[in-house]
Image (cartoon, rainbow, N blue to C red; front, side, top):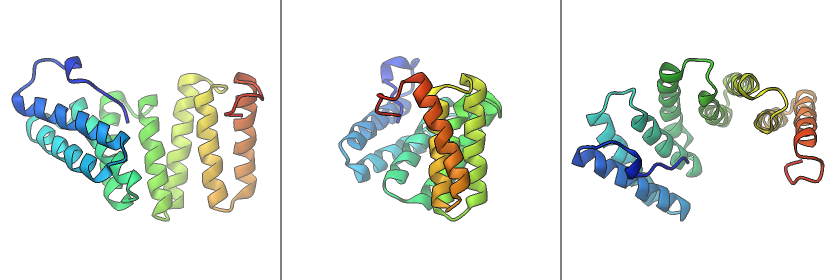
Amino acid sequence: FPTRRSSDLPQESPELKQATTLNEEALNLFKDGKYDDALSRAKRALEIREKLLPQTDPRIATSLNYVGDIYLVKKKYKEARPLFERLLQIQTEQFGPEHVNLANTLDRLAVLYAREGSAVKADEMYKRALTLREKAFGPNDVRVAQAEYGLAQFYRGEQDFDRSADHYKRALLIYGRVSGIKDPEF
């Protein structure tokens, strides 16, 4: 997940500094595979920030993302989904509904909805993320190819092989044009 150092932030209260330190610790523990310890720190940082900051503050969004990502890794999908839904709401209010900054959260929600058996919602999230990336980066960008690949994987899991093949083909075409066929991504 994204990193942010305490030196990047304006002057803060001691409690907010503690939340930043907790998030930094959570990030390091996450990298070390110590997910339970990372989760407890990330959750505590989120609690502090929710208590002291307006709900639209980007630091709350960061904390929601951290806690959600840890739940994803721990395969605790029911716990992760409401965090990412809330994060999407905050990002939509902050950036607008058509901003590419929403794409990663939409991808995470797509995975969560698919895991919960909500294929229609998952499909909607994957397609929306793909559209946002196409608008932001153009149709032949590697990030679009990655989104196409994710959508292809989803359709394959749904046993919709025709649509899956279409998205795999487009991903391969983009990777081939941008990186060449010798690139590992291809």
